[in-house]
Amino acid sequence: MALLQSLLPAGPLHVNGDRLTRRLEALRAFGGGADGGVTRPAFTPDDVRARDTTAGFLREAGLRVRVDAAANLIGHAPGRDPGLGTLVLGSHLDTVPGGGAFDGAYGVMAAVEALQSLHDQHRRLDHAVAVIAFANEEGTPDTSPMFGSRAVAGLVDEEELTRPTADGRTFAEVLDGAGGDSARLHRARWPQGSITAFLEAHIEQGPVLESAGARIGIVEAISGRQTAEVTVKGVAGHGGTTPMEGRRDALVTAARAVLGVRELAGPSGVVRVATVGQCRVLPGAWNVVPGEARLQIDLRDVSADAMDKGLARLHALMDHIAADTGTEITVTPMQRVAPTRCDDRLRKLATATAESLGHAHLTLPSGAGHDAQWMSRVAPTGMIFVPSRGGVSHVPEEYTAPEDLVAGADVLLNLLLAGDREPRAHR
Image (cartoon, rainbow, N blue to C red; front, side):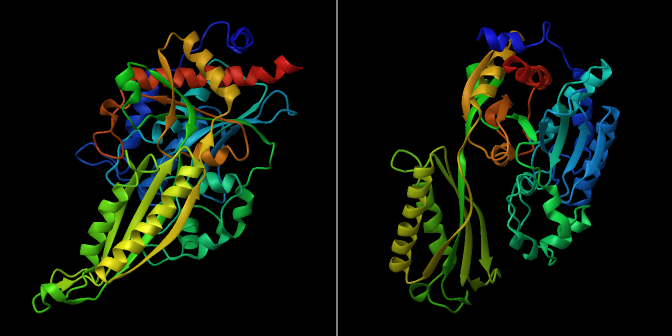
């Protein structure tokens, strides 16, 4: 711990809290609703406007700004020692429909504020530093989430670009329309070893920190995620003339499937959480017995083995329901994100940083997925959390107190400085 403490600034630095909260509020205008929530899906005009506004903030912080082929917004400043890699901070600006104003946006604004604070004090780091606002973290309809960070890590499947999206365009067309360059997507990849460390600040999106009275969360691991599509095929029919006893109603069968998925988690389950987040019914007319229903399933755990068992039990459950209802059910595994452990060295350094600032802190896992999961494939990765009031997120009521927002940004700033000093301790 003495060595870790020696890496911290002699006197902790502080961000401009008023500027941080003011900029977060400015972003709320892009997709903000009367209920206080924000609907800003990736690649929409509001998302592009939020990105352009953030680009202005980055320039105020003295950074050179560009948009890469994956539509990631990047602000960059060179370091004093060109032989060192780049310290990267970031998160995302897009939201889910009817989401909140802090998920993702806080991490980007905290990163901008950390660099702005250094710029205001005319402090230049030995490392180059970059802020990235990753594109499409949430995943728009018919696209895979965390696209921007996967592109930086070189882990995008080129087949994704040809998929049709909800508005009828291919994903490549959507990407290009938002400032990306699908034909040169490979240029978004950062070479292995070019990033010294990646740091992401985020709201917790859960109740642990608030319940414990802790201001800072030090993330030890990020839950993995297995998504799957369950397709139920029954027989469509007239809602008024098809007898109840002869129906093979796909939606009624899907309702059983939804309840069954819930049992994959909990006391008798095998994964930490299991969610059915979407249901599409075909043909979707009020007076037609549904002939098909499609469910989107989300299984999460910090254990890869538990995720495997959850998927196997999902297959078995759907086979049983299909046989019992006379319907046809298929399970198609979709995106899998492996559980990710945060870098132990960065975690310990973040703990020392929080203590140096006098903030009550707690080590905890993240139940939500983050861009940090993909960035961990190319660099040591650390995450810090700040409390979410009531533990809610992805809803208009999402809220973090200003003093907690500022505390998290202070930790991020001082952790960045400690990370800049760390390589010199080993020379």
